[in-house]
Length: 168
Image 1 (spheres, one colour):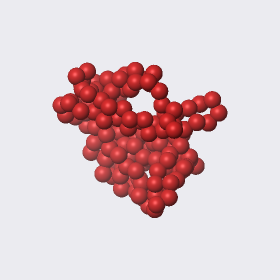
Image 2 (cartoon, helix red, strand yellow; image 1 turned 90 degrees about the vertical axis):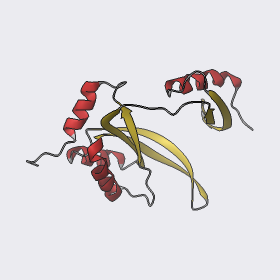
Image 3 (tube, rainbow, N blue to C red; image 1 turned 60 degrees about the vertical axis):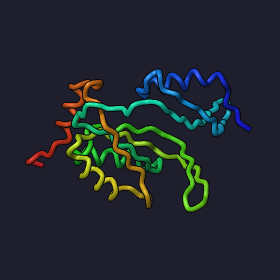
C-alpha cells in the first residue's frame, strides 16, 4: 500500500523546475512506496519527464564525481583524494541505500562522496578511486558543471587545487 499523497505533487513540480526542465515539460510522478522510521517518512518516486529539449550547459573544466562507500570508509577515502590533489574538496553525506545485488535486496548504511575535480584529472581520480573502493562494482558517476551558472571563482579554485604540481 502506498503512502504517497497528492500534496507532494507541488514538491515534485519544484524539483523538476530546479533540475532545469522548462515549465512546458510534462512530468509523470509514480509513487514507488515509502520508508518510515519513527515519525520520519520518505516517499520514493520515479519521475518521467517528457517533451523537453536536451539540457545543454557550457563546459567549465570542472566535474563533480559521485560515489558511495561503506559508512566507515568515507573519511579515509576523502582525505586521501584531497591529499593526493585528485580532489579539491569532498563532501560526505550519510545515506541509506536499497538495491538489488546478486538477486538479493540489500539495505546498507553508506556515505555518498561529492568529489570536486578539474575535468583533466577525472581519469586519474577514477583510477585511484577504483584502487581504494571496496565494492566489486562501485558507483562512479561524473557530472558536468555549467560554467555560466556556477561561481567562476570556485571553479578556478577547484581547477588550481587539482592541477599537477611538479614539486610533489
